[in-house]
Length: 307
Length: 307
Image (tube, rainbow over the protein chains, first blue to last red):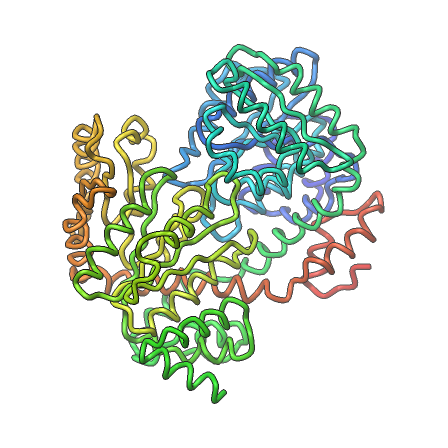
């Protein structure tokens, strides 16, 4: 317990070793895990910026450029790259690209990647816990990068104060099919690689869509960038700033906390479900011709004998 | 109850109306939902073929071509297209493409799409339940198509007897980064659009990788196809057949059932978690400066008063 108090003091002082130790405790659920989380001062709200979008849209270059800009102003940043273990989304490259970047030795930047723990919601809860530790650690911004395909971009919405969706002009042809979901997700659109052909038309189409889905409180701006040349990044940082000070976050807060609570509840409820034990029970019983998995699960949950 | 018995009889006779009604009961959790599931005769095992791969790889054309071949031999097929509501994966097109296909009026083919119910595992459980209804309905094959990006392809692995991963030659450059995950997933590789440049080199590289990850029991064959011209589909059907009769499915069975059980358990455990109630509680309490979401969740789960 004393150890946890010391850690919390260290976090308040933005001590790098305390941050690393705390994240390690949370990630591996070591002794003091619960005490640490329930004692985190979550009142002060560090802006959490979610950066998502399809593979190849240039999320990492946008983030690198954003880091350059913000650290140039003396801001302290934490960057979390979420690496789901999907064979298709090349997730593990995200963290690598950032780790190998020029910022790795910058004392103003803390870079961490989080790997998937399978498909039972474990990663989702870990992102919440780790970013909450970072919120207590004196950063000016927390940036979370996810590959926006599959469910991960839905998760970022329940987590980020400001969600930035990075697209490229080539997405143009498909915009009609993506509009419904994307409009609910994006607080800010980035059209990256906007020196490419078709960028004008794409940005114009996007503008039309945004205005058709207009919400009185916040109209997502469309920022044109060329990430690798740092173009448009000042505008992006301003848009993030504006969204943060628009007052819309206050309204979103209960929703965001509800999403977080649901994922933490799911994680807790599945904590005692022992995959290996279930495997052994199934190995035993599935040979019976009348084996029915729904009865098996019902019995298991209701505590009836299942053997 | 009597109603459910009649439905089960209808399923055994492959009656289309009984199938549609049963799926509707399961999907919407109507009266009799549990009785139906626990009474399903799950002993006979209809092969469940999962078709996954990145967007644009041509999964739908492969499936259309496979339907043509198999129904030509008088086989009865059920096809389930899983449409996660992701804004990036263009999921809803899957079902559309199949629905609009030539097979929609073919009496040997039953086509159904399943939409996402949010990110709390509901879709995952529904796929299991719906495909189990189909397994009791006299089909020769069940084909499940998912967009293989994000977590959906991980889900197909725990569900399908035979998982077919569809790739295109353009994926070649990225093969080094995908190899680890993909090797665990694929029972069969399809290199679609293999009339394109680079197809030879790509198939060769894939062959090398497959042999490096060799498993004594089953070496995933690499089938070259041009889906829109029906090329290579006979070979694909043979490979599916071979995998089914290889004996490896018997070994995989307890694993597959364990994965299914875990998803059903998660779905059951979250069933009573009322999002709106939690939202109201959070709206009430989150104003307090000392509000801590981890304490909130702990209290909620342990049944302590949370107000």
